[in-house]
Image (tube, rainbow, N blue to C red; front, side):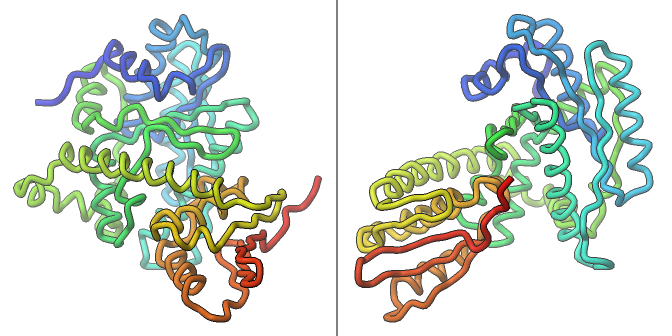
Length: 352
């Protein structure tokens, strides 16, 4: 038996205080739709919500963004099918977008291809949103996705931030915020919704391909669930880890402000003598905040790997003569005379 999902329940989800500020009156919304049951259910729910429940907020338009990565010939027809469905509904604007991720040529690393495709997809959608004054893009990630993300990152040895999985509200850049209202909704519920209301959807064969890590994890789900690792329990675990992450981020933000001694557009100076006495986790996060502050244009891109920032911190802490280091486009210089740590951009952005 699956959870019940209808327009009333969906309206309750969007009424969550975490989402309300990101759905402003008189502004358009975007929704990423691949044509699968998850995104088609989200799109149909949004269309109904806008027509009825969302009328009081006067949302100006719903833009449906479908991306063809050029990796499968069937994708052209799938994007077209989404467009045809959108044309049958009033007030929907469909955008067929194309991107061609650099996969590095022939490779057996399916996961690398998927990561490149994901990055290219988000870039092209963000560009479209910027051009059409869309400040919020809704994504159909659900409970099963959240559970798989936790397992996938656990297998990769991720730290707390990775294990906390996906945020319901995630800033992408200064112009765009990603919203995930279905993170606590099972995939089976979304499929049931599509079947109940005759909403067409496609099945992407890559979602079952053993060439990719996530499909392999799905095959192990039966054994994991028999041991109690259900998607619901994993999602609860992810939310608890997210709570701990948010607390640490708050402390790190306070540490950043407390140790910041000078700042320009392209440089940051921290009181290293004060920062190095903080708990290591807080100090590490403070350095990440500083890196992020120097690169606002790539705020949502993945930061440096955890092991690299850990290694840098260890060198800063223990090397008697720390030489200049560069990490993630940021130059680190320790000034032992003043007890300061200077950070600057490796490459200055072009003006104009």
